[in-house]
Each structure stands twice: as structure tokens, then as C-alpha cells.
Image (tube, rainbow, N blue to C red):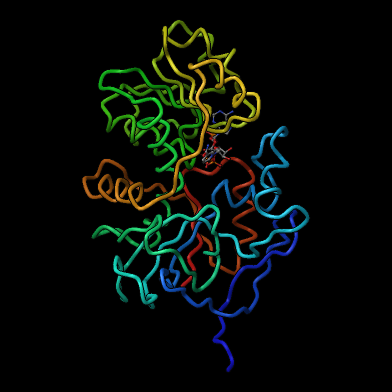
Length: 326
Ligand SMILES: NC(=O)c1ccc[n+]([C@@H]2O[C@H](COP(=O)([O-])OP(=O)(O)OC[C@H]3O[C@@H](n4cnc5c(N)ncnc54)[C@H](OP(=O)(O)O)[C@@H]3O)[C@@H](O)[C@H]2O)c1
């Protein structure tokens, strides 16, 4: 029997954005514990760009994604970490979702959302989209928000009244870090370039620092938490004097150096969030209560996914870049 077909953006080799090609491929079949999602929106995260060209992978870590995702060429030929869409089929064992549900989720190792259809495990990092949120908006949430929540809440246990500085506050992770730190009751200082100052104020930042004019590490102000999303710009040693006693440096984009430092120095924190149903439920609740709002920079059609990757590689994106699939 001929399997039904769909459009997808496929890559068969690592490299520049041009390796991404629009192709016709079979629609995947959901296993017993999976749902089939008709994809309405996906995104281009730093994670997707890393798995194509290792762009934001620190030099001392470049081998790691190849070990996990294919040494010479990618094992999963369709990228797409974040997804929002409609459930159109469910496996026999699925109880959490039904056909017709509008869902959003994340799958950094599973991928596959640069396509008209994708399968995801029903018990995994998937949740129904809160009322009033579009597919485009929902797709823009899980990657940045789950990372910010993991570092600020689970790892640093941010408390009301604490001083939190977010470096890279206008980006995919930083824009949620500002909002989540505020939701946790912190006083937030956002660091970004001149043209993003109003944007981060709008996200709730109490104070802003324009890094093109001022180096926050040279100020006298000190912080309980410095959350750093900018690869290669700072080291713990640079931030040490800006940290209060017992303060923590959350190296979101840290490399091997920070990972090793974190073993013996409790002030340095590295890691990766678990992607699971509980994490998605937490984001769903924060969206419902208005504690976080998606920030969308640009939208591209599926056929222009390579162009979207090119834009993300500039490292200038504000919030998320969305691929509107159908
Ligand atoms: N540990 C984890 O599990 C995890 C999870 C997610 C992401 N990450 C890593 O975190 C990093 C950030 O991801 P992202 O999605 O937030 O990236 P992104 O959205 O591409 O970041 C773009 C933002 O970075 C800002 N920026 C660039 N250079 C800067 C500088 N020198 N100082 C301050 N801001 C600067 C830009 O603002 P301006 O235009 O104002 O400069 C822009 O808004 C990536 O390296 C990614 O691999 C790690």
C-alpha cells in the first residue's frame, strides 16, 4: 500500500542553512503510545541551529552533538524541536490526548517538527494549548521558557526580593528568564543592546543595562543570581565581583570549562532541563495566569526554513523565530 505523503524540510548532512531542503516524505505512523500531530507551527531554536551547523556549541563541546545525533551525518533528517498543532490520530494506548486537541510541546532529541505531521509520545513533553493562545504563539514557548524555569527555579531556587541579572535578556531564553524571575518575585536587571532596551523593559525588567555602553561586571551593584545566555561573552571569573556572597552564576550557554568548574564550585551552575509532561504543565499554568507571554520576532513559511536559520545565526533574534507550517 502507498503510504500518504507530506512536505518536510530535510537535511542529510551537517553544514550551512542551505543543507535544509523542502522534500516530499512519508507521513509518520504513530506507535501505540504516540499521537500524530498536524503541525501548524514549529520554530528555529538555538538547538535546531546547533544540530545543523553547531553554531552555538562552544568549541570544546563540538563533538558531543555528533556523538548523540550522528557522527558523520544526522540520524534524524528532520529538525524541529518545538511544535504546536492539532492531534489528528492517537495510538491504541493513548489516554492523555484525543483527536482534535490543540497541543504544544518540545522534543529536543526527537525533533521532526519541520514537517506537516510529526509523532510525539503522548506521556512526554506535550500539553494542551491554553485558551486564547494561537499555534504560532504556543510554539514559541517551550524551549526558552523551560530552560529559564529550570535554571531559575529548580537550580537557583530564586526567592522574592533577590537580585537577578539576565545577560542576553532579549533572546529566546533571556526573554523568558526576565518574565520568570519577575514571576518568582525577584528584582530583575536585564542586559541587552540599545535597540532592545524598551523591549526588555516591556517584559518586566526593573533595571536595564546597555552592554554596548556599559560593562555590568565593572559596576558596584551586586546580584544573587547572574543568568548568562550569551555563548562565549563572559566567564565566571568576570562575574565573580558582581555576585553577592553565595550568589550563583547560571551558565545557560556554558561549555566544558563551566561544566568542570561546576563540579567543585557551587557558585557555577550548568545543566539542561528535563523535557517532560510536568514541565509542560508548569508552562501551561504560567501562560494561563499571564506570568509569561510569548515573544515572537519573525515568522517564515516552511519552504523558507533555511532563510529562518540564516536569521537565527545572526545572534540578533528577539525571542522566537516561528515556522508557520500549515
Ligand atoms: N543549557 C541548556 O539547556 C540550554 C537551553 C537553551 C539554550 N541554550 C543555549 O543558550 C544560548 C542562548 O540561546 P537563545 O535561544 O536565547 O539564543 P538567541 O535567542 O539566538 O539569542 C539572541 C539574543 O542574544 C543577544 N546577544 C547577543 N550577543 C550578546 C551580548 N554580547 N550580550 C548580551 N546579549 C547578547 C541578542 O541581543 P542584542 O541584539 O541586544 O545583542 C539577541 O537578542 C545558546 O548558546 C543556546 O545553545 C542552552
